[in-house]
Length: 289
Image 1 (cartoon, rainbow, N blue to C red):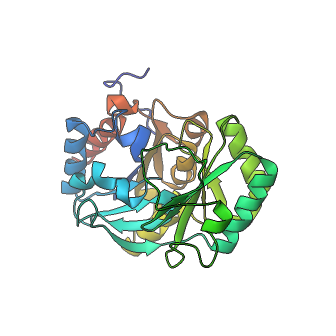
Image 2 (tube, helix red, strand yellow):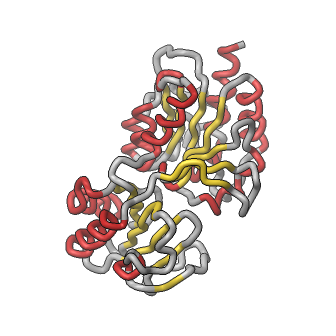
């Protein structure tokens, strides 16, 4: 276990940071889903120093209440692994979608069909901008009440409940497969019809539009602000963070990170329970002083 007081391994000198992009679960948040006082103070200090902070997460917008009190300035977060940019200023339940990068229903249906053939027994749920729909067999992982129960093919039909809402991503769960093996299998089966990743310790995959990822949406947000990738510092812990960590000028894998993340990041820091994000931010601000 990495000590909270140990200095992070730092990549080669880079441009002064203008934007911090951080994952939430397993990264900014402790395992009890809290944001420590040290981390709150570090985020506020970064914003005060003129460095924008973006939360970049696989979470849907309705689960962002855990950090809605800690947004500053722009108040934006990237949700659904890049499928949506959300304004959190309104607080829980009053968020506004600024940008939506949907998964076309045709692609979604193809992904479901291909994965059913490659991994029999897979169960599905559908994340839309405001609705959540699932198959009857899909496990209740988050004590969430779905808006409708039906086979995925029916949930994605043109006349399905919520058909007027964009699909942000599909969740695909397998009860017995190894999580990494399931991810590899799904990527091979689905190919370029969708982007497949995972952030859960279980065999739960997240399927988005073909070019949709944390990295691609973060790049769009940075381009709108005239911020280059060399001026971005990113943090993550799971495979859905790999593209973002590779894209950013400086990136840090948490001490608790997946092996793929450790290989992708240009630096390492302490684990999420040891305030690894705050450790790096404090050091960056000291370097700027």
